[in-house]
Structures are given as structure tokens and as C-alpha cells.
Length: 229
Image (cartoon, rainbow, N blue to C red; front, top):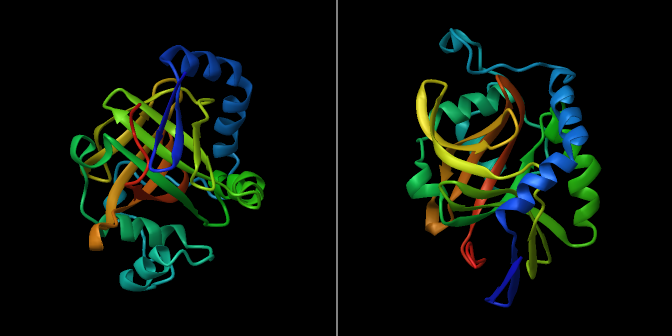
């Protein structure tokens, strides 16, 4: 393990073997996560053949209002069709240019029916009471952290229970876009650019288990935390 201290932040970096060992150790947990994707109240599939004909009108809320609510971190439940409609309207990003070499702050977007909703209520919110928040870190095209916890933005440590991730561009809903691929899990995260105003880069992301949506979230660029040791 390596430790880097910059900008009054202490950041941990683990060796590659740690990710392999941890994902094997947490195999039962990861299998349970896979099972929960099939037990969601609504098994949302947004990338199947004929996706262009899907009804994504949702609540009918304007894209401007949806974007404003997300960027203002409003604590509301979104209609998943609205998020799909917003995603389709956004520009794609590239893994090499927009993901790699960056650290991100994460926020779950609730839909009242996804696996990530459960994580929000059972893990993220309780941890926030003691100053812990989460994000992601993409070091190279083949090395990344799908979960990076931090305490009061002072101490950052990856939680490698899902193993390592790689970054590439994959077509989702008809458009190639930056994608986070898990080495050992049947999961992918797809991203579009939600905002880059005033240098504050925000990505809209969807986490998928094979072809099933497991939840939505945003990533906001963290320019003060080192991505490499």
C-alpha cells in the first residue's frame, strides 16, 4: 500500500493483488447484489433491441428542470424514464479524455426502486452522519477504484470489494460513451456529460447488471484529490 499526502489530503493506493483477493473474499456479497438486481420492483432494461421505441416520457418534467434539480442536489425521487430521457439528450464523453486520470465525488439519484436506493438508505446516509462520503477514481485505462470512501475530504481510501475496473468506450442506447468495466463482475457504468459550467464537470451515470439498470448517480470532478501516488 502507498500513501500520498497533497492539498491537506491523505490518499491510499493499494497493490493490484489486493483487488483480486478482496473480490474473492466478498464473493457471497457480490452474488447477493446480483440477485437483488432481479428482485427490483421494476426490472428496467434500457439497451435492448428496439430501445428507440420505448416510452421515456416519464413525468413529463422538462430536461432543464431535471438538470437543475440534479445539480442542486435536491433530495427527491426521480422517475427513471425521466433520467433515461435526460441521458439520451446529453453529449457522450470519452474514457481517455474525460474519465482517466481523475477522481470523482459520487451522489446516488433515487428512483424508489433500484439497488442503489437500498445502498443509499442502508449505507451512504448512515455513513454521512460521521462525515464519510463516496466517489470513484480512474488511474489508468486498466486500473481504477469503483468505490473510494473519504472522511471529511481529508482521508481517502478505496474499498476494493468489487475488484478493479477498467475504462473504455462502449455503445449504450446507440451512442459510444465512456464506460467503467468491472474486471470480475457482470457490471458496467455508462456516462454522459451533464454539466461542465465554470469547470465544474458533472457526469450522469447509470450502473447496470448485464442488461438491467441497477440505479443512477452523478459524478462530480474532484480536482483537489490526487489520482496517483
